[in-house]
Length: 113
Image 1 (cartoon, helix red, strand yellow):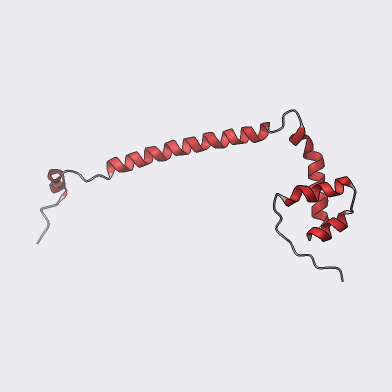
Image 2: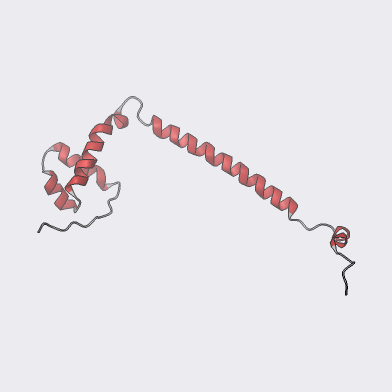
């Protein structure tokens, strides 16, 4: 039987070093997988993603997509803040107690005793 592999959570900090090692060609993917306790298929997938998407990191428009996503998120948050501020104002105004003379009108005096 082969070795049982346990799925290990991997932080974003470790991922680049594990992904760059196979590209350098110093060690095999199997050796790297054993050292870092991850599946060789995962390292192959990360390496492929890096080699295909590297131009988005180092290309002429690097960071543009991230900046656009950030702006979309920020404008959405600003809208939500405005909506919540309006709801709070409405609730504060509608939740204040009416004056005593207005409260007496709310009491039904025709109820049987």
